[in-house]
Image (cartoon, rainbow, N blue to C red; front, side):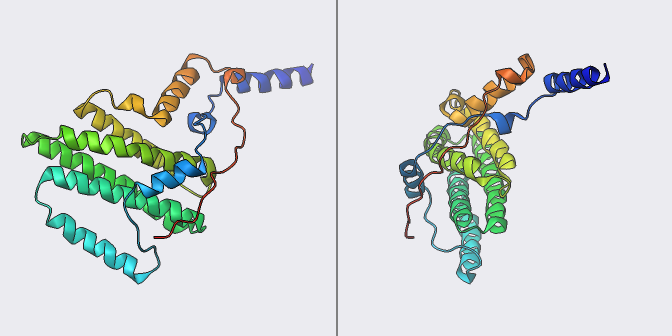
Length: 223
């Protein structure tokens, strides 16, 4: 009787405990070719930490931003910086420099937030923002490819969950400027569907088990 009671409690806890949406969402696969295409279409990266020239280039970025007067152009500039930080994350991760990769991820979130702030400022000044919103949204598809690769391969080495939230916030803000952008991103579709499933029915049998997939084949890219 006691064994039966224990089994019933375990079964009940399994049914009523929500599964983490992020861990159980299947984002699909990205190929080595897609990864390399995304790298080729994001901002150029010449140096990586701990190279001293890397930190010199960061100082140069600050000066360049300071002398960019238009809020629209600053929004574009901040997006370019976010692209650099994401590419740096990928390259550092491939070199197993996980601490530096996580620092780059944190800076990615900061850059996307600054981009949104500048877009809001530009709109308040009655500047035309739709062209730059469209440009950023198109290029965010390359960010999504790199993020999916990092989600699939980062395991416990990367703080990818926080960056996924930043990416979603960025897309939502862009969607506020020009509706219809959110549906273009598979990551956000899967996340939304996962949340709906977990709230509608907590039966674990309905969740898709994510099987390990082959990592994207990273070709050597010379910068």
